[in-house]
Length: 171
Image 1 (cartoon, rainbow, N blue to C red):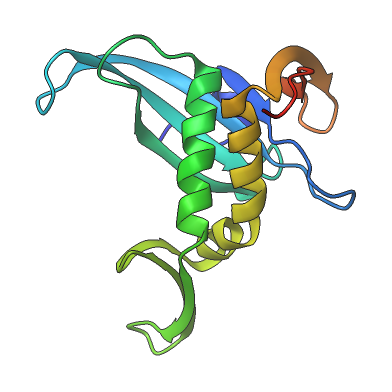
Image 2 (image 1 turned 135 degrees about the vertical axis):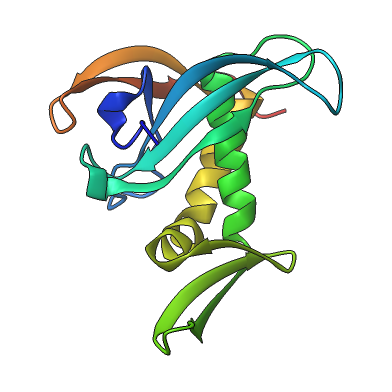
C-alpha cells in the first residue's frame, strides 16, 4: 500500500479530544478516483485512509484503500472521515478476545457480529477508542462540530484540518 504515513495522504484530519488526557489521533484521506459500481450501478468514489497516532509508519494503527463513497452523489473527504469514524466506533463495540494463534502465542482479536475485524495492536486501538470515534463522528454528522480550519501541526510537520464547534444547539 502506498499510503504508509500521514504525509502520504492529500488531507489529514484531527480527531477531536474528549478528555484532557486524550492522545492525538489523525486520519489521512486520499481520493483514489471514481470506479463503476457493479452492485448498484453508477459510479462511486474510492478512498485510501490511515488512522494514526503520529507521523511515522509505526504510528499508523489502521489503514486501507477500500473505503467507498455513496453510489449517488458526490462526497467530500470530510464526509468520508465521518463514515470511517462510524465504522471504527461500531467495530470497537465488538468483543475483544485474547486467544492462542497458530504459533501457540497469545494474540488479541476483535470480533464484531461474529466476524474477525482486527488483530493485535490494531484490535486494541479500535476497541480503546470506540467511544471517542463515535462521539466525534456523531458530532460531525449532526453539525455540532465541523472541519472548518486548516492549521500547521508541528508534531506532524503537516497541515491538518481541525474541527471546531459550529454553535448549533442540540434539538
